Amino acid sequence: MIEPMKAAVFICRGHGVDPSILRSLLKDPRIGHTEILSSCCTPEGRDQIQLHLRGRTTQALLVIGCPGALLKDYQALAASTAMSPARVAVVPAAACRTVGMAELSLSCILDPREASFPPRRTENALLLIGEGRNADAALEQAKKEGLTVHSLTPFDLIEGQARLLGGPGRFSLEVGESIHGFGAALLVMDHQVTLERERWSDGQGTMVLLAGGEECADVFLQELESTVNAGGKVFAVAQETPFTGCSELRYAELQGRGVTFLRAAEVTIAPEGAFVKDQHLGEELVLPVAELVTIGSSPPLGSEAVLKVFGLPAGQRVKDMRPGESGQPGVFMGGSTFTTFMGQDAEEATLATVMIIADALQRSAPSYSIMASIDKEKCSLCLTCLRICPYQAPFIGQEGMIISTERCQGCGLCLSLCPSQAIEMPPADLRGEMDGTKLSYGGKSS
Image 1 (cartoon, rainbow, N blue to C red):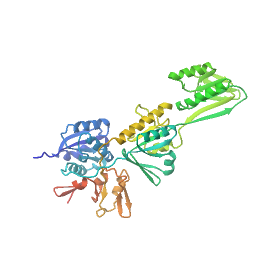
Image 2 (image 1 turned 45 degrees about the vertical axis):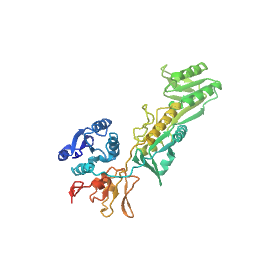
Image 3 (image 1 turned 90 degrees about the vertical axis):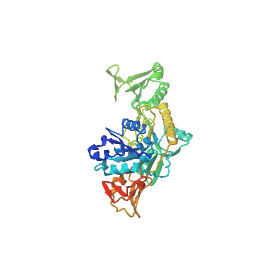
Image 4 (image 1 turned 180 degrees about the vertical axis):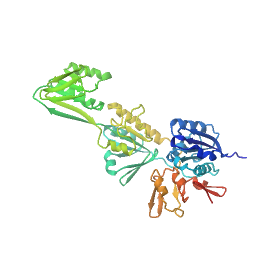
């Protein structure tokens, strides 16, 4: 006699699920393990789930309370423990007002009939958005890694009113009338360095003011070098010293050649000279200045719009030691605008990021296609699926309601809430009835 399959049920309290509503469900003899976590979606929560699945005491996984969009993440977690992804279901908090959806999901994942559906090809293309030296280096490295690259500029996104859909491994970006499919995105942009000259008098003194950050250091040093070579007195003013480590030798050399270094937050220019309050001396100095050279920087036009399209906060920068990780799965960042790396370090970090992306996209892993479809005869055009889909997959066409296969992520939210039971999705199309009784959200119907 074959032992009946049992499911592990994990309830996520982080999204406001009330476990008391699920009391009758948790008494079901088909449940072999029940656990309530403060949050299933955190790394700690997923580690706890994975630890149980590795024990192989249950054959299916039901997560209650997490967003339906996380279904693929839990399927990948199950696959890492040799559990079939078809035996995994997620019931969103919005569907937990009654126990009906949870009962349906439990019956689906424990149905002994195996659903068969074709494997889905994960997109191995890289979407590269950016301009400049680091973007060019990223493009060359991606070609060496054998990646297909879709290259766009920030202006393409601004003018085309871009919209991002999908998730890691199966993104799609709508830009105007075009749709780009890709597995991961790399945003690479560099600060624009500007140099301005102003003539104040016929004297000999020249002040070089560093108004930008580390990205301006190379231009700052080049300007100091050329000004010293031209002769005359040179004053170098910066809020923070750009000389650290080995570059202090360059500082000593320039100082020996007549450059006076000052550390000040503000400089005021007047007919009688430049007023500078040096932080080390603690007093204000009046310096004879004939020419003022200001070196500054600013984020390139369109950088904030790019971050917005990818759901990243304004001014977001990569600050940790892992190259390129933005905090958004499948989205990576590079260049001096989006990271704290500068100069050669920025380029090396960008190249390392491309290699990490290539490894992730080209790594062979099982992938499953779980897409919803609509039975036109049952559909009443109530628009429930159109309103609740987080991926905007349903739309009305000439033949009625249609679900876009490009946008659908298989979260099951439309399946659970369709009042006409018009939506089918494997394995739901095989497992939607039990003992001759058809199961639906909120209860049973004959």
